Length: 294
Image 1 (spheres, rainbow, N blue to C red):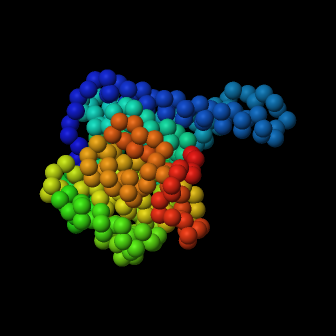
Image 2: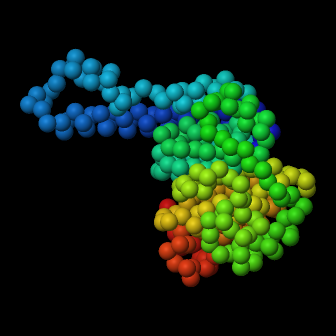
């Protein structure tokens, strides 16, 4: 979803700090890894000459050169007057999980002013963005060709939310299944094959448009995110939903991602941790209490 432009200077500076912190951590880890290799390498010379170390670094991928995507993100957010719609505290919830999990698999419903940031914070992982506006995808591709994004068509509308909520409570929707083969009306079935095949570590639902009655709304995106998490072979999925101050995002995240899986709410962002359901066919769709940990 193409977000509205904002210009809060303090948020812009804090975004730069978040990316810089990630960069410093990246350099520290790389330096530590390189140092460890030098100490543990089987060599009769415990103190190799500088010329050898320099030569090794210049030809090794372990050198601490800034990844181009992070460099471009720093330049972009330093010079841009447009900032993401999420606040620093909301962004920090997801960035903390990325700090633990990256490089990982990250699926984002929406392509916006924060997309380059998410891509950079998941450096070395795979981040895919799903967007409803084809012209916006082309515009972003021209500016940031490294971002992987796909067009998605939504059949629902916000004014159908109440009816879809009742549909989602039926047995065809509470049965755990691959969304592309599901009989549930809420399941998104036209996504690229890799979106279904990858087991996502993180899923962010920040699209499609949902602020007026004729907009597609996030009912199907929220339901599908929850079903992808339950249908994975093993492990857990971190699912984030933004704009939970709105009725659809509030009700559908509580119903299909489950309050029992809710780990944290910060402002308009909710973080759910959903485990696989394939290891226990008798596991209830929603737990009574939180049973998972990060």
